[in-house]
Image: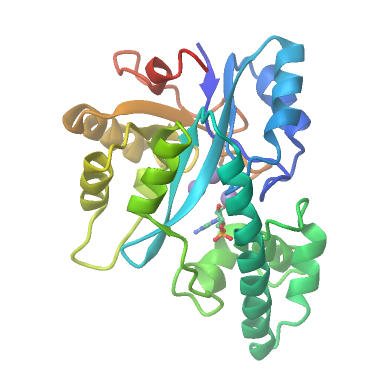
Length: 278
Ligand code: AMP
Ligand code: MN
Ligand code: MN
Ligand code: MN
């Protein structure tokens, strides 16, 4: 069964509306989909409506921004039953994101790259959820960089010249938040993190497990193939259920369209085991 439990829309830093991403997933044969915009539930009602119209199973999701090991990591909450706490969170983060965006733009100004705040804002579908990705798209649009990845590599990555440190939730706070809202906790794209020595992703996963983490993304559009294999073994060894998602944000060379990430090996127990009533 084809599933995609990690997709973005214009409610955060994706290019397509919730309706449009659901249609894309459906066209690719996806039978179970979760929309997982960053720190917001704003797109869920629209996506669910379209998924139900198309006869697809839909699971609510949110990708929470978390600070750990002096880096930003992402934890996905799948199938929460309470939504008000997410609305309150987005409201406070939207102010924080706007402030951060202005500070990022000031750093670009100092490098002689002007008006990036205005351009990033114009590119954002949800002006209340401004992302570093909107700055990457702005730099790409004006030709300062040749790709999104280059924008992050050169400027926007954690500790890069245009990076502004953000205090997101801590991991214990995020896990309590997910538990209180009755969500299932999934570590997003574990292969993508790198921490200052001596911290490793395994340390992160051990703490996540100890705090009640349920699953990790094993195959994702944000992993290279070798990482999919590595995290298959990690899920088995550490006793995590497996999740999978394209992490689709819009067309990006070399990245999968909705539902087209590598499928999970069929012997791995999946996070759907915990989502039967959702
Ligand atoms: P923010 O939540 O504003 O910190 O923005 C983070 C977003 O930027 C992520 O959700 C990705 O969509 C994108 N992103 C982060 N790091 C990279 C990277 N190294 N290359 C490309 N995109 C990235
Ligand atoms: Mn993103
Ligand atoms: Mn992510
Ligand atoms: Mn994502």
